[in-house]
Image 1 (cartoon, rainbow, N blue to C red):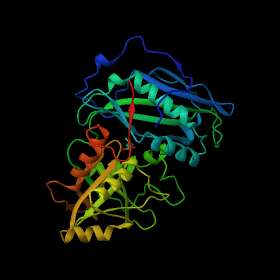
Image 2 (image 1 turned 30 degrees about the vertical axis):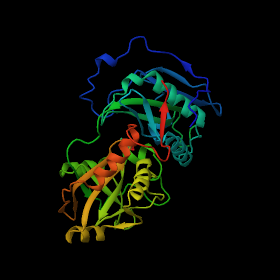
Image 3 (image 1 turned 90 degrees about the horizontal axis):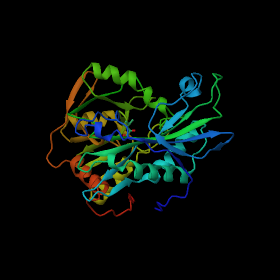
Length: 357
Ligand code: COI
């Protein structure tokens, strides 16, 4: 990928960095932000000259449409630093393409590819000291677009703001993840926005997830909205099931996010000789597999958590424990993918993109 900058970006640098105030060993996921942010406004029918300026609060009218109609989409991606101090992005073109797929579904104008890439690379170069080397450390990058036009008429906005903000992070989940399989609520429906990273898609999960947390689970495994008989996603992640030695995961659809980690893991698993079946996965078959001892693993896969092994699930008020395996597929795949991300192994598909400092 060409990482030379051709876009004109107006840059205002911080006077004093906040980096010395940050305790990088005790980060709470997504709550500390780097010195700079990228932004670009869509007004008069076109994207204006992008800017990078010190991270700060925004000034928006209370009637801005994003607050009323949730017209907003986002992405999640990460940058990694290897032991030689080189900085790497993982498949950034996938996020660039996907934010425009999400935007289209939400009637938001597409953001130009070169603005996205040039803004991202410039921001990485400016804030690279916030990326710490070492397993589990990374910079979580959050591109997003929101409707900024004032006025509460329920129609698509004429004005938007595209931004990229960055947060140094440690692993997403600490401790064991227990989940509940959804039997009432749904994350997405046919013809809806489940495939998009639309903000409201995530907001709508908070209430059912709160109910699950009150019962002692960390996340919900979402089932199809029509029948609740097929397993689709886990929390904010795609989900994989290992029955005997086969990995199962649901196909992408209107309801399921085309996850970058998901598709990378499918490829890596196949390369490792693991049989992968991408097909609807029935609740019934997973309950049966658990009862007859062939269900070996369940794990979530996403950018934030990478791979998140699930230790137990609940269905119909009954708990099902997963076995604790040595050398699980989750561990093997996590090693494979993070070795590529941290520049510790070959990168057979050219997924890694270096940010030349
Ligand atoms: C991801 O893991 O890709 C996410 O989008 C998680 C985010 C909602 C925190």
